[in-house]
Image (spheres, rainbow, N blue to C red):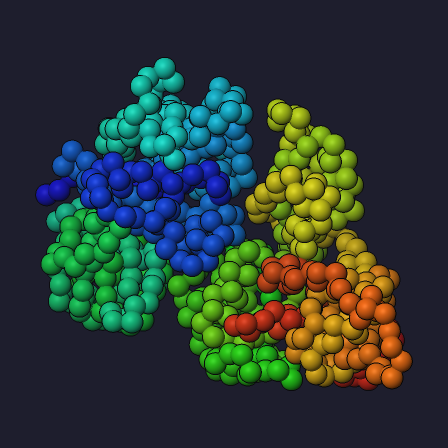
Amino acid sequence: MTELRNIAIIAHVDHGKTTLIDQMLRQSGTFRSNQQVAECVMDSGDIERERGITILAKCTSVTWKDTRINIIDTPGHADFGGEVERVLSMVDGVALLVDAAEGPMPQTKFVLMKALALGLRPIVIINKVDRPDAQVDVVVNAVFDLFAALDATEEQLDFPVLYASGRNGWAVAELNQPRETLNALFDLILSHVPTPTVDENAPFSMLITILESDNFLGRILTGKIYSGKISVNSPVKALRLDGNAVEQGRLTKILGFRGIERVSVEEAQAGDIIAIAGLTNATVADTIGAPDLQFPIKANPVDPPTMAITIGVNDSPLAGTEGSKVTSRMIRDRLFREAESNVAIRVTERGDSKDSFEVGGRGELQLGVLIETMRREGFEVSVSRPRVLFEKDADGKLLEPIEAAQVDVDEDYSGVVVEKLSIRKGDLVEMRPSGGGKVRLTFHIPSRGLIGYQGEFLTDTRGTGILNRIFHGYEPYKGDIPGRRNGVLISNSTGVSVTYALWNLEERGFLFIPGGVKIYEGMIIGQHSRDNDLEVNPLKGKQLTNIRTTSKDEAVRLTPPKILTLEQAMAYIDEDELVEVTPKSIRLRKRLLDPNARKRESRKAESA
């Protein structure tokens, strides 16, 4: 029987998890010396590579001194915390990565809290110690304080510390030791992380934590075997958390993780992390077991969604011209398929409309990634402004989700940040210098107060500020928060935008579109300089006459338009507006395209 260790690498976003795993794969001999491998090989999705973040948890394995180490790379962004919670149930140890300059951040606290609650004993790795602004001793003390604040046991508080540079591929127990390899990390994993606690003689059982779809194998379920062993073609059944049987079937394929590849194996033993195929209904948090298995494996409940958007059919005049998947049935099937594999997302059908669905998630980024994935698959959809999900306490009082927002800014910009977040009902709970002329501010602020703030924050701090957020809890409703101050410029015609017309509109505000693009009546083409909406004609061409003009009159130069990203567009729109998302375009529009219908709706709202 092969010796096994199961470990997850956890950290705040951009603290170096995926880069460290790259080096572990190289130094363990998983890659040939001459093999060309992409940087951040675990971030296999297009969106993951483009944004430089991990979205889906992924499993790999290395062999060190005749022991197979299954390693799980976890997301670092708070919006994907649901992935982290699930995969921690598969492992017997965690390596907590902390940036030597930034120290513990909001997501560090979140993932560590989940790991400690499961009784895991972390290994602490202070990464990037070769940074010029590294403050190693300060960060180690901050990590210890964080462990203590999260009620770590005496055993958990006695954590080993390694100092590392994941990019350069070395880790040492003492800073004065030679900085050459990651051998110290591999050896520490073998000595500190326990072997899986399993019962080899009991009937087979495994807990599903990741669900994927494969064009050849169908549904692929990944999880850890808690007891017994399994071979290909064995009969199994799936149990829900409440003990009810979902289905029975046979395993057509067992896949083991060997390096960055999944390899077909004939059998697997207790303690191993495997992927299986052959079942059609089993999903995340289900237990797969032998036919005589009576009780499911206990799984941790996932924190509920705090934010929701409405995704509906695209009903604009340009609908169906750029995408191949436009019907409500296609959108419905895709969203429910996503909810099945991603337990942090909830999809419900709206009672007032058959063509729209409410999608709840952890934050704007997670919901934005889902829509971005769908548009790349050929979907056309309309998306509403994100809104928070309220709850009620025992007395019927309204409760709203509160975020713990941590802001790192230059001291010169701290005043404007405090002012803006105070207007958005944020409470400043801590303010302390963080070295290098920077200050760290911690706020407790309603989730709705942060919708649309990221762009304003970057403008206020000249792009130098860093804002991190994590769900803090529910608190009583804090009152109204001011929305967008400016109105919008709305097209009153359908056609192709004319550069000359847009040039004349620049004095009314700034534009979201260039010349020569398709537009329609009711589409938002820019932001008004005042607080009211203004209908304009972006199709008006220059009157042709037989009078000669100077050349300077003919050279019309537009100020470059402000092209909004998907997340920026979702955060920018108001309640009566939508984002039209297609594979080629992101357009802003009024919910009601007809101006007369909009006037009737506004009169109704005023009288109400």
